[in-house]
Each structure stands twice: as C-alpha cells, then as structure tokens.
Amino acid sequence: MVVFLAAMTLLPASGPAGARSDRPAGTGPLVARTVPIPLSLAHDLLAVIPALPADQLYSWVRRGEGFVGWGRVASVVTRGADRFTEAEAWWQALVQSAQVHDEVKVPGTGPIAVGSFSYAADSTAGATLAVPQVVVGRRGEQAWVTTMGVGSAPEVPQLAASRPEQPIGVRFADGGLSSPEWATVVREAVARITSSVLDKVVLARDLEVATDAPIDIRWLLARLAERYENTWVFATDGLVGATPELLVRLDKGLVHSRVLAGTIRRTGDDEHDLALAASLARSSKDLEEHEYAVRSVADALRPHCFSMNVPESPFVLHLTNVMHLATDVAGVLGDRTTSLTLAASLHPSAAVCGTPTVQADAVITDIEGMDRGRYAGPVGWMDAAGDGEWGIALRCGALLPDDRRMRIYAGCGIVAGSDPEAEVAESDAKFIPMRDALTAPPLQR
Image (cartoon, rainbow, N blue to C red; front, side, top):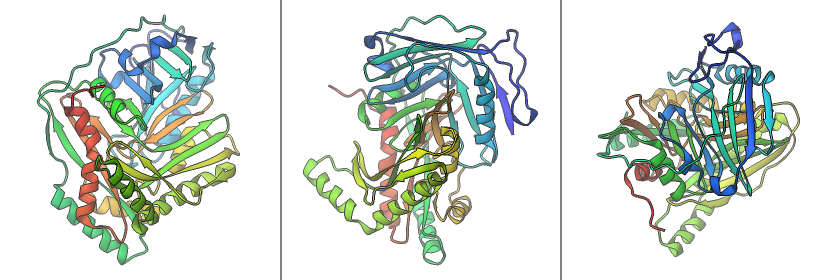
C-alpha cells in the first residue's frame, strides 16, 4: 500500500499502482539547486539545524561529513511487502522531470530523498521517503547547500548555529519485556537452534523513554556525534540514532557494504580492551555469528555485481562502548540496480535477522514479543541517479507523536553457544548510546 503525504510545498505525482497525491495549489516539476558555500559554514553540520518538528529534520553525518536537512517538499509513505519498490517508483517518477542546477557535483548534491523502512512488512510503522527543502552538506574540502521546491527552488537560507535543549526529567522503563523475561526468550531461541536447522536468530528488546518536556532531537544528534564518530548519525521522520553498520553504498557503479556481527563490551582500560579485542577475534561463537552475516550479504549482492571482494577474515572495529567483528564487502555493479533496490535485496541480513532467513524471521515473529517498527530496517538516502547510502537503523530510538516519549532498541545475535545473561549484558551495552544521548551533558573537550 502506498500513501502520499506532502508538507510545505506540495508536488503532484502519480504513484505506483495508480495512487496519487493530493493536488496542491501550485504545480510544476521538482527544482533542485546546489551551490557551494565556504567550508567554515559547514564546519559543524549538526549545529546549523534549526528548531523544527522532528519529522522535518534530517541527518546523515559521519566524522563531520555528510549532510543535514530540514523542511519537507514532498514525501511518500509505503507499507507492506512492496514498500521498497513503491517508494522507489515514486522517487523515480519525481526526478524524471526534475530541473537540476548542481554547481558542486559530488555524492549527495542535487536532489536527494531521505528515508527509513520498517523491519517487517506488516509493521504499522511502514516506510517514509521524504524530499527535504534545504540540505547542507560537506565532503572533504567541499561544502554546499541544496534547496528544493516545486516550480522553483527557495533562496539559500542564512546559516547560523542553533542551541538545542537538553531533555529534562528523563525516565526509562521496560518495553515489551523485562531483562529476565528477555533472557527467557533467549533460552527459547537457543533451544530452537539446537533442535532445528536454525543457525542464528537475532532477538531485539526495547526500552520506553518518558520526559518532562518535548525531546529536541538536535541534542541527541550532537551527543551521538561527539561520542561515536565512527558511526553514521542519522535522523529522518522522528527516527534518530548512530549506526555503525553500513548496509550498502552505491557510488558510480561501486558497491560497498560493512558487516558487523560479534560484539564485546569495552571496559575503558586500553590494555584490557586490546586483550578483549584479541579474544573477540578468536571467539568461535562470535566468528560463527559473523560468518553467517557476511555470507548473507555476499549472497544478496552477488547477483547484481560483476565482481566482488569478500575478505576471508574480519577486523575488530573499536567503538566508544563496544567492539565488533567487522568485514567490508565490495563489488562492481553489473546492472542498473539502484542503492535502494540493493538495500531491499540485503534486508533482512543475518546481522538483524539470522540464518536461514525464513526460519529465523519466523522465530522472531513467534517469540520476540514486539513490533520492531523501523528499528533494524534500512535508513539512509538516495539521489536522482539511484546512488546513495543505506545503513541499518541500529543504536536508535523512535520519537512518539507527543514528542515526550521514545522507544529505544537493542538486539543481539543468538547462536547455539549463546548465554542468556551474557546476551542481556550485551543488549544493555547497546542501549548506552541512546541512554547517554538523552541524559549526558556535552563532553568536555
């Protein structure tokens, strides 16, 4: 099912399966204008986001590069098994007649759409693909502003630093299951793995967040970026987080995917953490889990690629709170597939579902006890040519409509050797990024 939404300036468009948007007062093609700006204006991308409702704010930033955006020219909401293809058809129809004036011409300039997709086809969360009105970006020594509109592009706005408000009165409560209840679910998963063809299943849990005032996601983005520079700090349609996992990047025919599976919590002691990293690299349980995840990604990408490079052994990715086994899979695109189609072909990967996929997904539905919403689904962006970057929505939370509540999520890969209490501890570690973003003050530099 596809539903068209529009805000600010509206676009008339025919959607897939004959669906149509409401006709706006003004009509015309999508117009996108990208102009260079001094690098100093984009020195801190997250600082220039203005105070607007969360569903009109966008971010895709890693190590100070990427883009932020705000406003909404047009958007589409899709649901069901065809949510990816319907969203892509809408975007392709939109950009087919677009007028593009791009003076910078690097990945992320020109017209772009930002989106997130539900993990499950039957989730009420659905999927949203939106066109921001303003995008401010930075890549290397280049910085730019893109404005988008109907019939004409808006003027380039004045960029100024903003001051987000720290959440107050933050309270956490169990979500669908308490920690002991979730440990029982893990035991059930281990029992099913040992008695069936199931090799791995990824189980998730959630926490409920309540605050005394509306949550300013700009505060969360800033705290996540300063603590987790190796992640992609994202926001779209009220979903905000910092994912370490790049599902797929497509850039001028080159395909790249970063696979993470196998996790150990850091202690803060560098010498001890090095020893833990070495033990992670030798752990048969974690190596087995990682191998499943890499295999699922390689198998999904291979039909679309002329050639592929799949390293034989993973490396250890050091993040602020945890370390992961990681593998970078690369390929050369062999067809006209877009980044969103590649993301759809990879979803759900073994890193968020398990193997075999069908059996693992059935176990998740049967015993997990919650709707994941857009947690563990693809999140990212694409341009008019279909290039783009899509991560997996991990280490994240979804803002609820009253802006004073969120659900935050964490998940763990369960295999035959998994210990339920250890998996609870791992999930607690994966909650830390969002918990700290909600409660901690800025780091003292």
